[in-house]
Image (cartoon, rainbow, N blue to C red; front, side, top):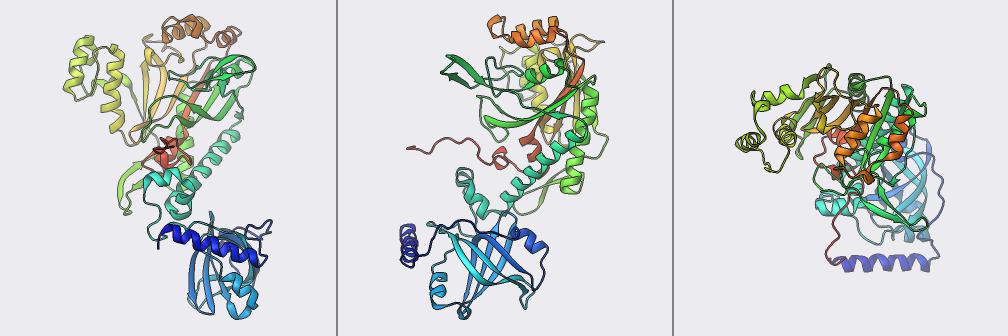
Length: 483
């Protein structure tokens, strides 16, 4: 049957409901609990009221079995047409897959032991005018899954697992930091200067003030102002925006956690992140061994989060690829990168060529956790210089599953050095300096450790999702042709 025919039939049923003075788009329906909780605490003889979407219907003549589902689970209901009045039986005959029903009845077990509710009262709460995806095939078209996420959530249990896991992970992260005395704060999403990272911002304009603004690329400079103001431990779970490419690991709008701890350093922050991620793995997934499986349920990769995690200096890792790398000239580094199969550009600075080799030959090949420490100062302009080698900064980058999950710094709190670093970062364009942040530093910021954690990538790692779009409910997509 063509979709247009199915739509016509459903609209005819809607008309028939209206002819019978039945409200097809009802209102309040008081439930005793969610479907999942009713099923988990199932008691024969207990009277319950539940509501959800009809996701299956088994017609056995006078005996009708349906599945009612919500995000918490599924429960079977039983309707005996013999026990309904003729008017009620006619109304029940107009129920379709996808409709929302409210039901009241008594819990019992079928002969096969299936928890079921014997329905004594039902209400149509919302009539679905379009059919659901085929329950056996779900929503297999990736474009439809991302563009019409509601269909994906209805039809694909695996997608529901990803997002329910994400919700639990974020809740646990918040509890973890609060339990350790960190204060959750909020900082501006619209800023006059896009600072805190090297990234292309989105631009907007405030009409009343006649002011050009940027959507934030990071909250760092505002959180550090709070350290200046006397907050000893702060964190924020925030939305950031970067006007850059889209890939399976990048979305222009993404979620980050940033936290700052006065009087700490990058090593304490590394310990904190290690404890956090292990806590998440054990509390939410029951193991420090995270298995990533393919569509057939076969394990394709196992990540071992067992502590302690390895730590290695950036220079040592590069020398593991080429022991003479740091003795090469810039041109020689370019040629050597090409020999190693790393795409490079002769216009790159020497440190950029080194970073390109690191990303392709170290980062992408690292599966189990690795803290990479003591990076070149050019890569991290907001971190404190190492006391033994001024060309390095006291930072870590945590690599898991072939990608950076978290950077952490001993934060730079010398306003003069910070000004020089930021001025170099903006190419000497003084108008792009965040003078208010530098003014705050001049009032004195305590030494501190800071971290960032990409929530989307962390969820990918813990759940085995292959694309960042699988863990963001509504990822940015190119409009359909003609839109």
